[in-house]
Length: 131
Image (cartoon, rainbow, N blue to C red; front, side, top):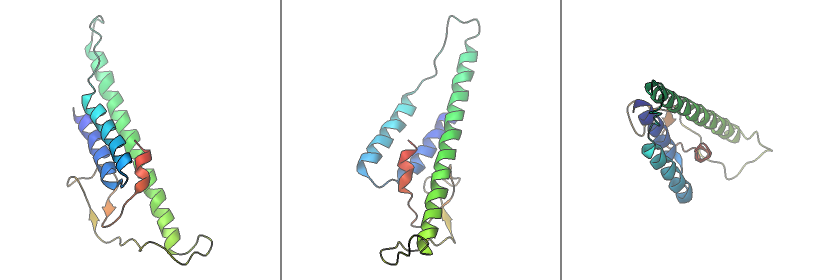
């Protein structure tokens, strides 16, 4: 159950970054599927507890993979935003987003965040690809 909660926390933080209604619906469906997921038992096996342990390890690895993919996506979007801020992309001058103020990290869901810390008014739309 702890691994499932960690995975849902990751998806909830991703959900809070996504702006598209369609992407939010898809992400909500993934979260419901994770909540519905039950460990598979092999009752015919001499020690069916081993199957349960394997299922828990799969959830832990799924969580670690989701966190890593989301953190890489956040890093990529921050780097792209920094490049935009310093006009390094083909001399663009107009229509640039406001610079990211990195003074106060926030946590949207809990006191301890499942992903990297976010900053006020920072949205990473690319996180929808993680789900």
